[in-house]
Image 1 (cartoon, one colour):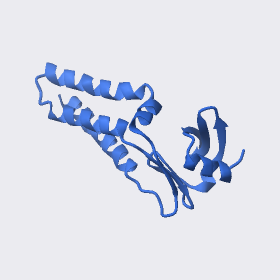
Image 2 (tube, helix red, strand yellow):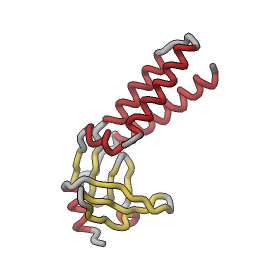
Image 3 (tube, rainbow, N blue to C red):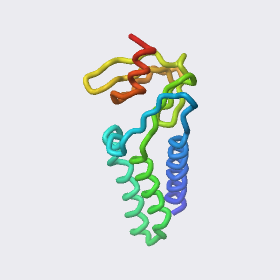
Length: 148
């Protein structure tokens, strides 16, 4: 029972941290774009199914052990907020704001045009990372500034 409670608290802390990150605001003068919740679910891929499914597993375990379901329902609510919350993408003098993370301009390595939008390459803690961007004002401004 203690392990299950600890698992819920850890899961809750991670979800709260991710949700708080998504509330980061853009800087003044940035080009800003807000994504639609269904686009966010599509970008999450299999995680859009696995995150709520893992919480349903916690709910089932609570039911089997005859425990209080309030914490598990709160986790389910937090996970649905995290998955469907519209994310701001902003680009300006301070760099790129993407999924709540701020990437400085010197960490942005380039942007590539794809069939359905753009793909941005950046350095994140020494690793090469790549994320997809929809075709919009932020991606076009990035494309103007960083040509591969």
